[in-house]
Image 1 (cartoon, one colour):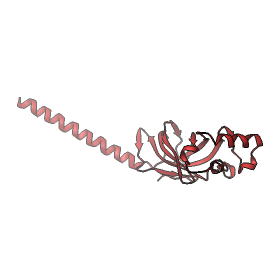
Image 2 (cartoon, one colour):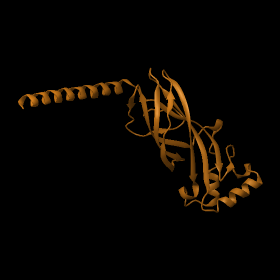
Image 3 (cartoon, helix red, strand yellow):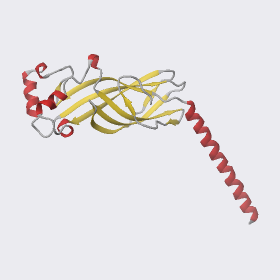
Length: 200
């Protein structure tokens, strides 16, 4: 019986030692990798209630048919804004990285629009390589901007694409999940992703 307990104790000590060694190795690997950087590169496919407003600055830029359509649509319970944000991520490490998940909150003009999670497996080349991926959003402006009158709702959805379709009015507050060499690189907090690269 004593012999059995001695063997059990030895195996327990070995298992604990291996676990601690594995944890230390993982921690060292995490510290040796730099987090990937993110930015919003462009906004496209902007539509208000199905009307393409990608390059429309005000109501006078719409055809009379589309202007009437928007005026009618904004009187309904649902006034959808649809758009696609293109996101770029840059990998400063010497190994290829993989983005597996992105938790996000979308803001336009610092107003919270929508939140969710995107599961995309995006491969990011090493040594400063850049990968891009799109996220498409559908926002009911009638629900988000409840206190706004009809003309303000329409105007809010116009002029969303800046020069060269830059998403200057947008912020994507996001928490990425990135793996490098089978090691997950933790982002301790959400990033405010705008038009310049940011990693923290």
